[in-house]
Image (spheres, one colour):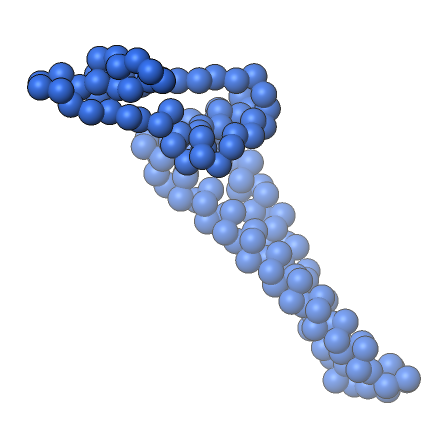
Length: 150
């Protein structure tokens, strides 16, 4: 793999062991392995381009479909991306609400029912969670519609 290329006149040569072989700069060498996770020495890996072709048929179909939809129906693809981003935002909000609720409960006095701000906070959290769950359901329905249109 180490290229010992030199020029003699107008011809390029490659030193391979003890021999000198004519070298074409367009020459490419490809190796293929059936190993699922091959490991190469660092000195070899640094001189190669290693490509991992592990992919599922379903994953490739989804990627190709997304590209076609992006070209033909950009609005559907943008809607799909927006739904994915909204789902992530909802998950973040739910985690924040849960953390806040646990913190309030940990700091609550022994008689939880006498702590009016805590009860009001619980009601507000419950309402926000309900709104988020409703939005997630609507998002799932819209995502199914987008998938059908694809």
